[in-house]
Length: 187
Image 1 (cartoon, rainbow, N blue to C red):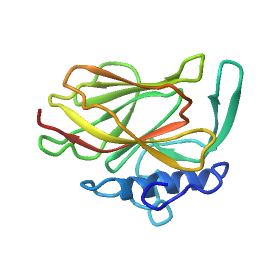
Image 2: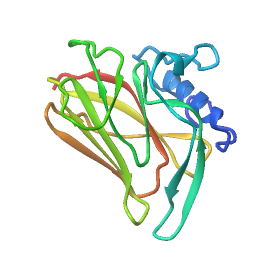
Image 3: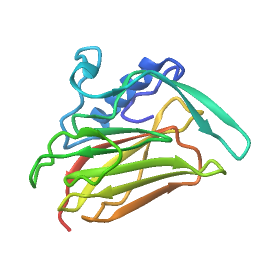
Image 4: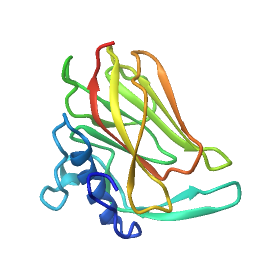
């Protein structure tokens, strides 16, 4: 349980988005919390995914499926990454403030962006590659949802130096990640 909140019924897509946004506000100490989607039409303001069924590998031979509601790629100071996705998030802020991220489809090099790729290996382990195309070191906090759990778990991640790519690896299946409190960080 994170911040006293537990995801109820992850098959219902709306619950996933509500908890992701609520968790961002309860986990992040220094960020402006994302708005609750019931009080703000999130997908009318930012680019969102269409509702979908997400297939997550549990091991070499087994998969599970999760229903995913319309969900933003980036909203306020959070990025939501589903397994199997590749995209980038552009930032227009100048140090010390990044500003809110803006979703961009993958492809092409873009300065002032974080490039994300999240995939699974054949054994079900999960890997996030995140390239920092910004001019300063970037730090962030991260929470993940495992495919068979109804809650978010906080996980540790490393800051990313400018021009470099970090690879975060989890030896188990992860359905999606929420990166939040994204910020410039001094060395």
